[in-house]
Length: 65
Image 1 (cartoon, rainbow, N blue to C red):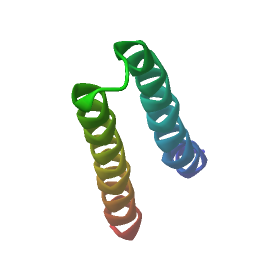
Image 2 (image 1 turned 45 degrees about the vertical axis):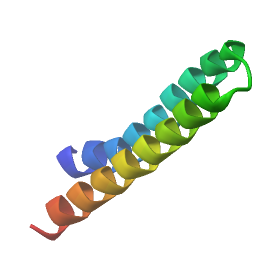
Image 3 (image 1 turned 180 degrees about the vertical axis):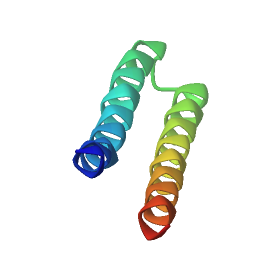
């Protein structure tokens, strides 16, 4: 049972990150199309990818233990 729940978490967390950052990026749109908007959008994508990578790395190590 515990293993099943952990496998579901391995999928739910990344989907939650993607949905959360999608929401953030949609709400950045009203800022306009200047350099600040572009920088914030790029930063949000970098942070999103980094968090997904860290989650994958952590969950892989947990599965190996």
